[in-house]
Length: 159
Length: 114
Image (cartoon, rainbow over all chains, first blue to last red; front, side, top):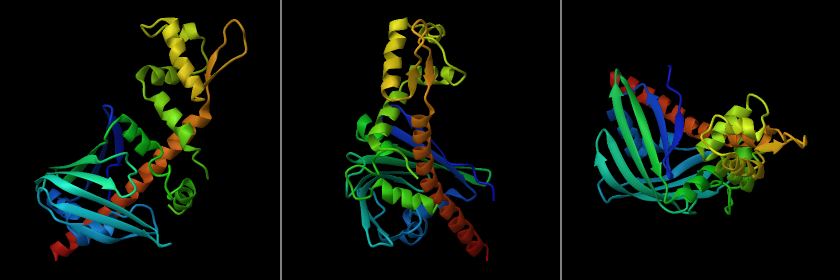
């Protein structure tokens, strides 16, 4: 099935915007973004990672908690709070990795727009500041944490 | 496989975070040019262009020729290739997630259709 390619662009000083089209209704995609049993099936990153913890309290002010586990036993966690929920078109939440990869909290807005049986998911990530965005884009996965380039290289070879 | 060190990537992305410097690199992709030739299409003085060139040079994105008169500027491809490779790796990780989501959506649709 033909899917629009993922695009991502920077906007302003501290924002990155991703877009991707899916051949499904926005209700279905909204479920995949918010129901733990579904989130766990796809939000995994590179091969070798699973998501043993996925807790979602889907209401404004409600918290979520994700923990990913690599096959070597290493854990990586993230937590956040929902700020706006307008099913099935819009979710705004704050999030931060346990290891603070992103230089402070980020604000993530997910927007779903449907046309002709296809849905475009637009994800805007606003970083705490310009340096944080740059850090996240460039070295957020590598600097000062155990998840180093060698790890990334090894992971990439399996992609 | 190597994606360069974070400091190099920082310098590369910082240098690229400016429209004039990106336009200079785009022009240099067609071939080397003198500072005067680079300044021509911009409403900018040669010293202002030189300032941008210094940033690009420091990041290793361009180098200057030895010809004392002209000192032509040319693009250095390695840092750009490393930055592109890093972004591509990032994009592939996200795309891997979304391809799993495609498969999950297909599965949900076939279950609902039953």
